[in-house]
Length: 322
Image (cartoon, rainbow, N blue to C red; front, side, top):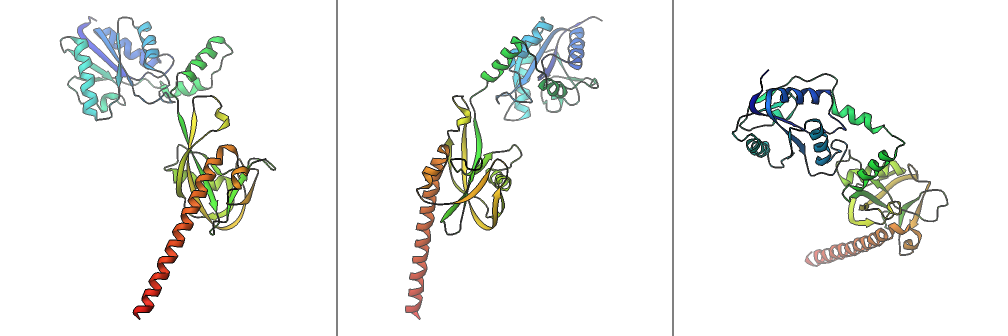
């Protein structure tokens, strides 16, 4: 079949080590029908993740090796609208075609659903059992005792952006503010610590994460809903000298009833006096949280005294008027 002197355009993410059978069939089909082929590789500015593990330059190298005549460009997602994204696609297609003669190719579940541009789309049938998600899942279990594999693993880790992991911690305090419930990682561990943990991807808020962690680590008790105290960077020793870190959101929960016992990640629990001696008893990475908690306690006491004073004055005023 004679090739048309037009541009064939393929748009996709291609986030697997090598194009699968479906990708190759699409590329070959477009290359057989057009003198020129443009491949737009979708991407965004979010750090590499399970859905998008490869940076553009790696995908570009693979595609240009397989299709050296193709033009391979990056096509970033738009945070504005489908119309805005489509406009940036059209600009690249127009520039690559030279005369505006081009056809876009994609499957039913591809970019075609959100494209609002000026070029026609030819829908391609999907080849069964060709899933990039399945390829990534299979690759996750692949390990090789080879120096090149270890270099690749190292490159993947070191090329990530420095990130701060979100956590929650909570102070479960008695209603009279006299004591706080603390935990120890193991029985007879030298330091006590606040209950808490990492925010889960399924948590809808930090408050929800705090309630979940309380139910997992401090069992047998009923507490109030969490009240925000503050946030704090935690010098977690597990992170060492890495470029990653933790910032925690710290909450107070009022103890209501029950007999506490240790749950996940805790060897034992105990009530500890809530005063400045707690600073020396708590794990070093939680000492700033103790200071925040003591300031929170002082503010509550101050507000309580102010409220009692206002009520007393109102009562005296009411008696005089009577």
